Length: 126
Image (tube, rainbow, N blue to C red; front, side):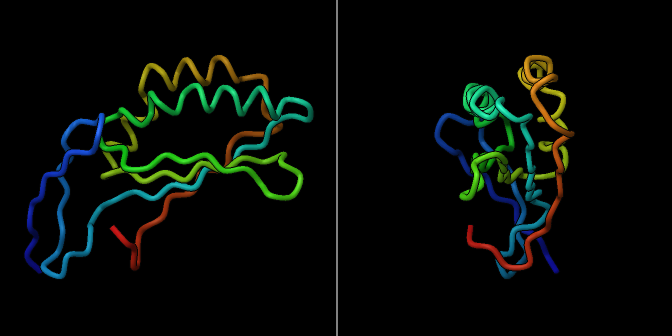
């Protein structure tokens, strides 16, 4: 199947290049679900740190979506839903200076390490 190259500029972000198949299905995007478990009593501190970091992450090249969610019952677990243009963008995200600073600021706030899963789209709206 032949690929077509596209460029798209998202507000406040660098232009993105992504590839689609002839049918228009986006290829190579990285869909991430990260579940975060704060220590008891540290939920608000974790939430504040994540919210503080979101603008930095959304400015990263290749960041298409970075949304924070909280469990409806209890509010003791957070979930980040992320979409990255490709594997390289996702890997660069983990190495970004603001992520290193975030990890340092929050290292004592979690019950256990974040559970991160990587997904591929079978069918997704663009």
